[in-house]
Image (cartoon, rainbow, N blue to C red):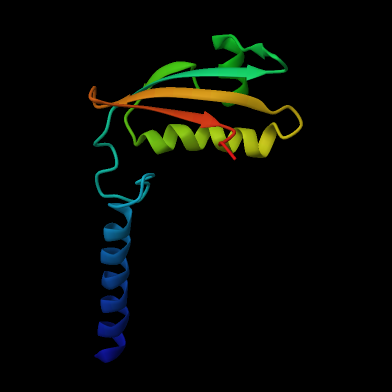
Length: 115
């Protein structure tokens, strides 16, 4: 009987711990309700000394320059940041994302981060 109870209790404890952890981090990827935010954003990108057009931003990041995402703002930021870190090391860009969360909280994110 203990052979069943111990793994089940460990699995349940892991799930509770993961849920509690996810509620307090910005990405919120593993929350039970991760879609509780509406993030409106506008991205401005400068690469090669010139400002990219909306079409060039979509091609570079596979995201529109202006849009709405029903997840955490960190999800949008992660997508732009990961594209720069993985695919554009030889052609770095300066990114500014201005966002509004649920129509109230405003913010701005910049890449590369200030040193």
